[in-house]
Length: 369
Image (cartoon, rainbow, N blue to C red; front, side, top):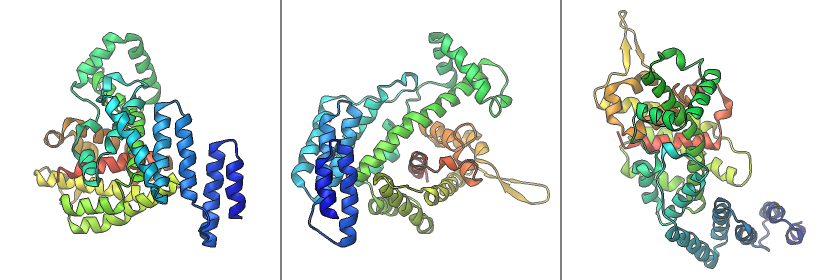
């Protein structure tokens, strides 16, 4: 049966068909414990062919990553070296731009690719440090709410009118009831809205590629991540003990996702979102910020994350990029991940993209403990 798969893959006209059949052959050989063919090296060679055919910069990088992944399994050092050099060459030829909220355009795919090229030279420690600490990963927030709003209103009045029509029909039920109609209030609504769009598109594409790239190139895995948290974070052993199964689940599901199987990130996401909330409250406790309301009958109740993020003292603790990103990801002024997952409001959120948004949120928070 494995002979049939091997020969059939070589007779296909399309590389994707060959790859599919080779992966099937690899499963059969593993079941039969037959070592006759080097399936991984052959799969890597077909991804390399796709890379050479691809004109799109993003697609070329994607196929290159997959080729490196399979050549690493087959221990083809010559191919690993050549393809790694290709990425390094691209890094040297192109300049790395910063993100900006005021210039979200199709060229952001190139921005993503350039950052991936930068990561090829990182080891595990450098990568995790980079994700936790560097604001290169974040939108550029050198403008306050009103400045962004006024700039867009002046430069693109038609866009702004269209925005309010869209907002009224899609978001009015939740946000606009809280605000008056002053220019400052409208500015805050617009600012939150643009962050929602940014997180849903730009950041998800960026993070999906970063975590996939780092995993495929063996820069980021369960052992390196847990090792980092044990050695360099202020998370205590008790928290790490409860967190470890969720992180292991993330990498197990990532492996399935990259192998074109159906992945299930439920365990990771349900666990990490509660740990994120715990970390936020621990940060508040560390700085003397009260996170509970006490009523006249001496019954106490934890305040919502929405109230925490509105606290002026809490705002001063986080950097401006971290504050706005986390507010949009976690609270009802944005994607509302905390409530959506805690109350099982939206099963569509249990995906690779949203898992990465939560993982990145976790990373951005732990430096404040």
